[in-house]
Image (cartoon, rainbow, N blue to C red; front, side, top):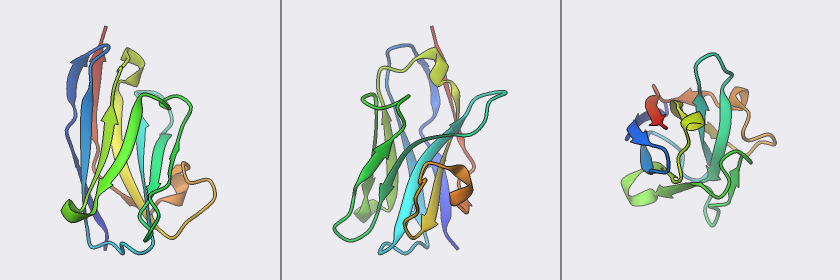
Length: 127
């Protein structure tokens, strides 16, 4: 059973940066796809970025809303997924989740494609 635990959320002023972490356990490194999502109050879950953990993989995909500001990465040695968030805006305020699935899928920023989720971490950006 894949287990995911996020950390690193907090409060920051607009223009600032945060790095979220997601500790991963019990996953198959040879065929796992991982992603970051967020959900703002009253809004639907939004896919932000995904990375594949296939051998020789590491390809990434970003939503237009965060492209150029957010970077997804992973440290295999630490079994940790990261989301570096720069130039934060008040509209980035949300609960952020990491998620995982086994095997590649089209539509890899769509929440229903991910069966494993962390508990979420809150990010608040003030103007």
